[in-house]
Image (cartoon, rainbow, N blue to C red):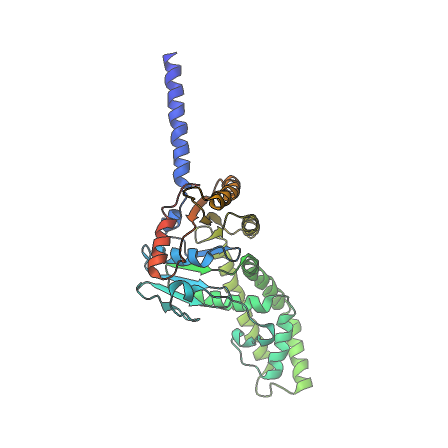
Length: 348
């Protein structure tokens, strides 16, 4: 009996340790990102208006304390980084005032198909050939935007930053962005596969238009497809890194309301389909009412329903709860304070 009692006590202790270890592993903070120096890319996304830019900017300030150098990039056409940091940024990396190892830039990863140029393939054909190639390339849906995204990622790949944080556009745009590598990989694969057919088309096009008088069509043809194959390899590398959980992860941001929770679930499902890692969710604008405010308490009760659903649905995620603040988060001081809260948040 004594042995059985001891065994039961030991089992209870082991179970308690197991639960405590799991709770430690899934602490309701973003400390796990700080503790993973091998992660190079962090995408922050969710529904519009839930605090993505505030979260990503604060995370960038936080990571700058623990990394050699950090770059934050806004890929949202409606850029807000300049507002968050209270500093003007452009499409080139610019040092954030007051933080030596933090840089920011605002870019649009998509382009107007009508303005698409073949110059990104590294060749300078005349207008007739450029028009012809643009038509051919644009015949694959989405490949023009995808090539622009690949060019952006190619440039990012050459940048020597310990961590790059992406402040992404609302969910729909973000999912489209994640589709670009697959679109481009398939599109370029088809184009490269049609290499011989393009060679005869170039020759026919030259005889009809009389263009390329100073360029050998076969030489131009080979140069274009060499560049296409090189870009395809870059895209494969980008695709591989995005799908590598040790190198890339996604942070979902939401607020405790139905539509935002729905978007978060949609995002998580799509990321899983694309084999992109996500194990952190930040819930912003959580109310902690004080006193007898009827409206505040009613809103908190409504919020709690969705918080419980999120915690139940993502029981293997780090779910971080951030309070609704009295003032907007703007400038380094506010972002630093918000970032510190991300690693000291309340348990859901």
